[in-house]
Length: 479
Picture 1 (cartoon, rainbow, N blue to C red):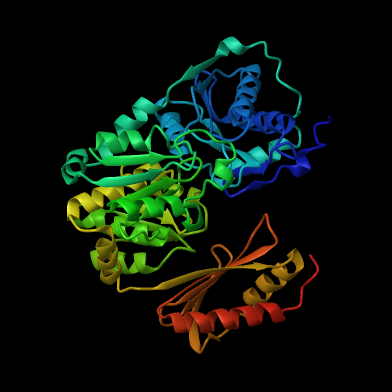
Picture 2 (spheres, rainbow, N blue to C red; picture 1 turned 135 degrees about the horizontal axis):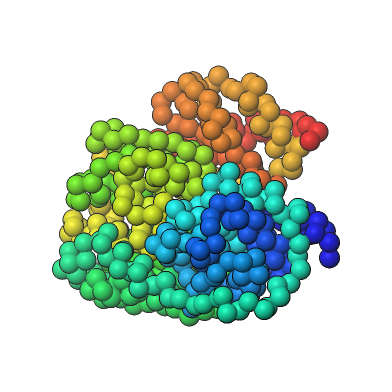
């Protein structure tokens, strides 16, 4: 196969390249992408620094990782590969700890079973910035997809990234405080990489834990490794049945969290971010900026104002939050899709830490989680109501929407004046009384995502109706 023949099927998104196994995600394309990453490494690091390689629980992920390791040693690098599937935050932490030339992580995160993916994590332990990924993408065209020679296996060693990561996590948690609370916890691993990690931390923190789905299943039990409502029905039932204090889950590579309160409510990431921002300031005396993406709740802005903290808004993608964490002191950074990190931690989202911080908040306050949520929302002048519309539009229609809202943004929506138009990522309409609307076209699917936040359900209905009507009436443009 020629160097360029399959590169048109390799598309990098906000967090690396994902594809369907045996369709575009093939061993040949893994060789190609790994060589593109190796070309980037040539100019960024010296070869006395190892490259780490890790993978999640997906079908063939371990073998894709081994192939990448063999490609890297052919290129003159020394490689350390994990001894079993591994969470993304764990390999990211080790990338920094071991003074490496960064890490390759084979994961498709929360995507369904047919997908796999690869992302490069630099030595600063956070997502690669656009400058880095743009360089890697540019290298793909000239990279070959030849299989590795297999002659340099002596330069590949296996290692266990778990002990150092866990030791570090315990420094971020008040282990004794959590122990004293004797929490009853249900943990659904969703067949993910967090098994053997999150349950170990829960045990160390003295929690009475029931864990399930703690084995590798490449089909994820027929579901998806995504810690959202429809995937968490068993967890919700277990919490309610046994009167547990909380239920915990992670996504496939354990960088996103899933939280269920004692009543069986699955908390939204927006709610968890608010709860933990308040906990870090109120109970742990921490300070720093709050960082959120354009699609994340403005209740965080209200809370920041209450505590006199800076608030920063970034484009969608944790790489932008991670970048801000490397530039300034950030108390907490997070996104509505379920990722967060905190002060003192690596600039990468971590579902294991997020889950344990919720347990810690309950331990500090001695109140049910549902009550803590109510108090956090009230303190931030909530509630606010959120919705996301996924409108199925082709490229021509998506272009028409962005074109129209860029050139002729509405003066008002549902009778409320538009006070500002933001163009950080998509088009964001900031309304006069605090509501907002974000239009963001998907780069990989025929979808226009419309995020909305407002202060009453009635207003939400009106805004949704007007946005759908306006978008549907627009004539598609040639792209």
